[in-house]
Image (cartoon, each protein chain N blue to C red):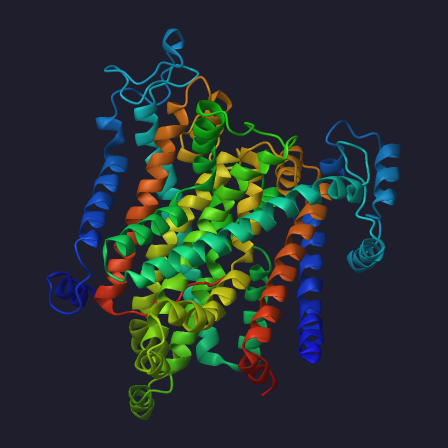
Length: 285
Length: 309
């Protein structure tokens, strides 16, 4: 998959254009900024300078300061850590769990498949944000419940996708060949079927990470995500919205960071889709 | 068609039951004793017992569920803990605002989205197409609460065209509906564009061109009709986007509605209100999907036949 991707990005095969490459570079910068935030942030994220509260952007504070006189730029940089890691962890959990359940259901079939899928599909009764709110109402606010809420909100999508991949692949001749050589179900599932099914799931996981960042920010905005003093983009906007008229820059920058990262992920993901020639198959409701 | 409608309606019944089970279980899945969660303050044993009996928590789960469902079908959703009023009353006060917001947002997504999609398709791969599709990408990725706040700053504070928040004047619905509608609009525009472009490649369109039918007539009378089917599918499937978006946006604009009710109730751990508003929002999604399905079946008879076989 990687080789094919490199191949395609080197302009061999269908051309995804320049936008995905720019978006990929932007994503790299974003991840680097999140990693390096303790070193590149001009101020500690929690240093309060009450004398300088609610200052507009200036040379000392490029993005201005919030109601406690904390540097907004530093908080956006540190917030990238929270927001990106929550999104990445929750999508990894969701994707690996979904792949495991989907692969087993798709391979085994029969009543197991029917009942497990029926249970998984129950999550589709609610839109993602309601499902996440429901879970946060149960688990209480915080980063851990946000991760769980996002993971469960997208579980059905990954399970369905993997399952349909496996179901289509298991009738292929190469599986029959393996069976003839006496391969057991574990071997066929792990060594023959999954490697062939993984590419579209990974691409969808990447695109869904953008949705996860949005969902995390929304929960944070409701005050249900990472709790203060941990900075997160959604949380910054939550407290900033109370000072909307006095200090609009406090919500401006974290919102722009969310928008930029989601747009970058979508453009990059679309480019990878084109490059890998994977048909887009995401949850459609 | 009537038969199809009834069958679809019956198919919703199990989904509805599942939703009620999930919503019912909510209060029991919360870590800790439900009574403690309900009371929150000191626990006087007599009060505990009274509350436990009042909520039927001393009976088995199945009994409790059946009793709860019994009340539910009679329109009794319990009593709000904080406000000490029937949940049904609270929902009744708020539902109108949410319906207005959701309806307008849906209309905005459909109308603006289709117009944008048709325009983009007729300028395929030219500047107008690129610009519209970039806007659509931005529209579907920008967080709605951020957009909402920026719109408040610009249209309400800078220009003073509309009220900042609340719902006292009818103009107050414009900004929230636009904010919710933008995400749906972006999706509709993309799907309309692709459907128009793909339909344009079909033989009957070539025939129409050969017959000398004008480009405008082909686009509006023939292509658009075909393109509307996937758009309807999308809208009926993504009705949750509108409902979910309304929840966020109501909160941003401090507008009354089911979403604000839900968010406030979660903050206050007011479980009967959480249950009631979640249930209503889930029903809204189900009914929206149903209406979309029926419209689709009305437009495209093949869908009804597919379902029968």
